[in-house]
Length: 103
Image (cartoon, rainbow, N blue to C red; front, side):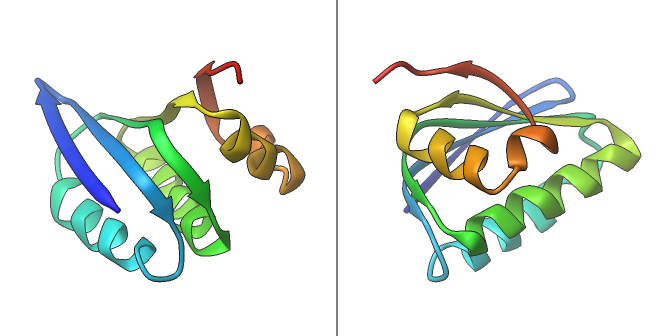
């Protein structure tokens, strides 16, 4: 998995590439813990995210709860495969998702 971060004022964008699974989710969570200090907005750009497991969903949920105290989090450019997982698990009701990609 590759994680690329872009900061624009108080908005942090994290671009995720590859698979977010039990091997890579701890790496993302560690990176987010160090980055989410004063930011009021977090965007997880999932354009190049091909797969997400329950471990990845847990990191999304953790980040959304953390940002709820100080700002907001959203997922964008979510591909069909990842969106399918989000729908099946009910995460579409929990997370803010915009710009869903068509297959």
